[in-house]
Image (tube, rainbow, N blue to C red; front, side, top):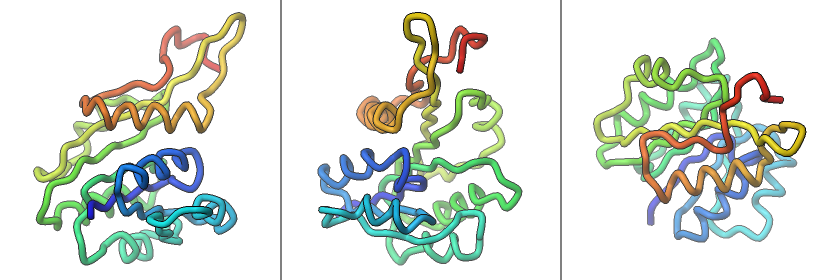
Amino acid sequence: MERALVIGGSGMLAETCHWLEKQGYEVYVVGRTRSKMAKLLENSQNILPLYTDYRDVNDFKQKINQTFDWSLVVAWIHNVPENPMKVLLDVLFNQKSTCDFYHVLGSSSNLNTIKEKLKTPKNCTYHQVQLGFILETGYSRWLTNQEISKGVIEAFKLKQPTYIVGQLEPWDQRP
């Protein structure tokens, strides 16, 4: 069975986790809020919780450093001083098999700079999913969790190096 690791899956990526489960993945979800995780786990057979806060890098590493390899990794990790992204990449460097790594990033992220700074393992195909906004008649708004999950799923299907959910321009009209 293929295994997916989803960081941020108990919140805005919850629908992504359910979709992956329907595709036959065993889905491990990193989350720190037990109430949100409990809701995610309702009626799920192959979604498994990894209760940790990725800012606690020692516990985070212990939880994601499984005895098996990850086929798919989806990471919504904020830039924090503890550097959980380095911990995640170290785990992936030690894998024997290949994986697809989808890095979910905010609208103001500079994708090229991030890609240049990250040293991704050769056994992983690195993808960036950038979250934008929606411009509607007379106003703009941020993406809903459902729109974010739908966009991430579309990124899986297209397998492009970069995928934008919503829009990034015109920048001065973002919410």
